[in-house]
Image (cartoon, rainbow, N blue to C red):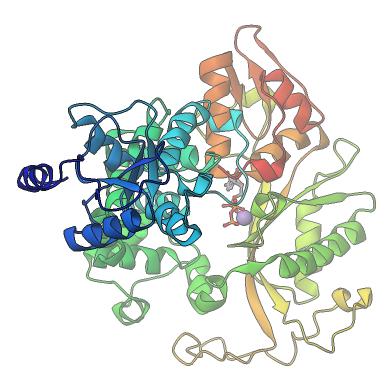
Length: 516
Ligand code: UTP
Ligand code: MN
């Protein structure tokens, strides 16, 4: 803001409201005012002088005759605030960046005002965006692609969500996930808090985090969480396959924060955790789509070998178009209802006999519609026959040919068998010709296949929102097995995802748009 003292000085020194009367006025329609704020007094004086020499009217004082306000390093909002504090101003005055001024100086005349010169553009856009930024409140009503325009914000909120989940605070976890998901669905970057007015799912806490990041570039809460011993210990320990947040919490209370401390502690580990610890580095290294495809070929081979006509589909994050994942998820079915019974154990035996499995645990199908009734809407636990496994995947070699016969035997199994008691974690052999990959296999009867496919494609939040929508908005119960209409008191059958969306009164959302 122009200090009062300077204004008085200016007006007393120049009779013509600040324009240097010694220079010819070439552009009478253009009356300029340079904002001192952030530009500085001496630069302002120098630039004003320059303008006047070139025949521009540059006012020392701001008044309603000013047609162009020139600013440097000010946001549209800042200038607007300053303008509002002035006694009077011309309604249509241009708020311009210094670039318009310097270009005009160079041209020797006022250059055409382009979008990039306009400061008020930011305000106009943000006003437009407040309107644009209206998103439906359920994530399953929105299209959420893999990429979003607000990653600094969504990553920060996702980290807080993860921390809450690791701390068994699911309510808070979901709140942060929903807030992040709303920002993921926005068509452009958020630049000011005013744009967020009226958006759903943005609670006080999330808004505070967003504000900190918009204003300071980072949030103290996020940074301190990221660096906290507790969060990092929870991450390391739950990175062990078979270790959930409850177990990790118990270990942390016993003073265990690292894998070394865990190994020294003498804690008893179950079979899954032992395998998880043994293959820790591999399992915590993202799986690529190319690796998922190779595993897909192997699983397909296994499935059709033991039951011709059976089909497999890649689900989870890869079906949503992700390029990497923490595991690979497959859904298996057979077009004839009932033929899938007993399939999993045969597939697992086949894979085991070929040396593809480092670990596996199969749970039986425990879903019985007549007995179970409609799926509980708030739960994503399903009761399909399921195999949690760790695959032994040959590393891709440059010379490797795409011979389909190759997948029939695991070529690396013989050469790499190691002493199971060796301390692989401490002396990890990084040059093994294979890597460990987490793979989930699920078998579904064809009558439930569409529900299973929808339920296993994710994202987790998208699934949760689908069930919330079904329950709250449609009085229906959705699970990975079935959809039950509570008002009609009957199951709604579907043989495709499209039919399920239609039953729910939702527009169909492609898998690639379910990345909420
Ligand atoms: P994932 O945990 O594998 O997530 O569950 P993802 O989206 O594939 O992510 P990455 O890439 O592996 O990290 C996949 C889907 O399976 C459902 C989840 O809800 C998710 O939508 N799921 C998972 C179940 O329905 N039941 C389970 O027991 C586990
Ligand atoms: Mn997955």
